[in-house]
Amino acid sequence: MYCLWESGMQKMVWRLGKLAVGTLLMALAVNLVYEPMGMVTGGVSGLAISVKALAGMFLGRSIPVWLTNIVLNVPIFAAAYFVMGKKYLGYTLFANLSFSAFLYMLPIVSVQQKDYFLASLYGGVLTGLGLGLIFTNGLSTGGTDLLSSIIHQVFPGLSVTSVLFTVDALVILLGVAVFGMRPSAYAVFAAWLASKIEDALLTGLHRNKQIWIISDNYQEIIHI
Image 1 (cartoon, helix red, strand yellow):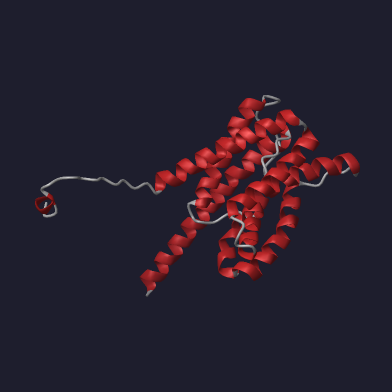
Image 2 (spheres, rainbow, N blue to C red):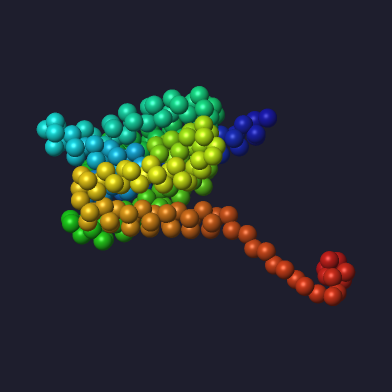
């Protein structure tokens, strides 16, 4: 019994560690690339970047991205609790709080001043690696991913991917209106690069090979 408990604890610590590293990488992408460069790649963090800029324009005082990320996720997690149950939300809540904490602690300094191409490369790589670590656990950081899953549960006719694409597209369009076309175009490139790196990590960890052998001597082959 003790060995089983110890094994379970090791798995939990390993999973939490991966979530922490993944959210750290994602927060680095936001604070070092996306926010200082005005690049909105979608998601709640992207919406938070636009909210910060709009608050600065109209209120004369910006709202930190980490704070908006937490506030916007509160109703999403509340809805998920009733729709999907608390078991699923445990690790996802940890990932979201970890992401928000890193957004708060890390400095906001652009790694490439106004070099949008290099910035999109750095941002895409950091985001892709971070999401890859998180999604290998079958989890998310909440935000639009979780919102899309909730909408799919309520309206099964709508696929998670189509809802996620629609929501993120609206966030990106807001980014175009706030920051202009150029940074938004590179933001889309960064999001595309991140998705490719994420897919490579996921398929690389779960890759299977199938071999077909066609022969008249199948009886002999099955005994080899």
